[in-house]
Length: 308
View 1 (cartoon, helix red, strand yellow):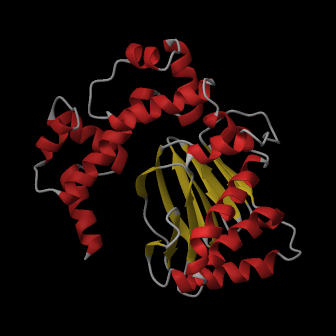
View 2 (view 1 turned 120 degrees about the vertical axis):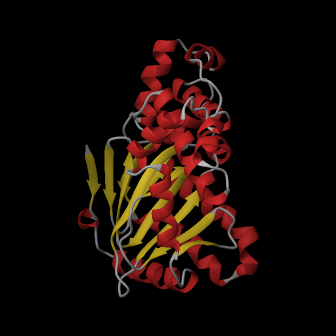
């Protein structure tokens, strides 16, 4: 399944001027390829001058706004495509694959990512009721940016020009951004993640546990008991939020961590497979190839060649 959203549906009054300023700021503070940290702790700027191959990552909750270019993000078998002045929200930690599909040196892919702290959302929802659809579906969604949200994003980015203002004004801009998300068409999804004792919030606790214990044996019965859900409710709600079962989710975490270890450690493939909880090197290699398209040894050689 592919979900796409286009900037063509946006009203153009004032949008082009705001976008031009965003592009200018992004090019200044993200002068080259890669992910650029900023003095605003939760804000990162991302740039690519060319289309990219798939990048697999465990994506923490965050807001991503494309300013220029186009990207495809995949969650399990689902594909999400978005482009300028549309945004993607990841409301729970998810293993994703993504690639830039439109970028050039003249018009680079430019995207800003703002990490979402569920505690901030929780503080806001005491005073803010979500609007829009009552849909508690996937833990990520696409939507079109509107003028109020765009203005709040622009104000946050402008603070990079006045570093002395960041400590005082950045939290206010971030709070407004999260407020606008909660009041948007998909705000209910963020709302349910933050409200204690909802089924979706319990699933977020299960996700947090899996991220901290991905190499351990997984007992569905124990996990369900831990978050106070039946095993059937755990399976149903977990798949609704993540598009995969708890076991499939754990497998993705294990394989992505194994790939990271292959690149950063001198351990052999078998040792890393055992460390990730696999019972045999052949099982590890088979599942690794299924996710990344090559065996661990071939994939490692490919990644190192790309880094040269």
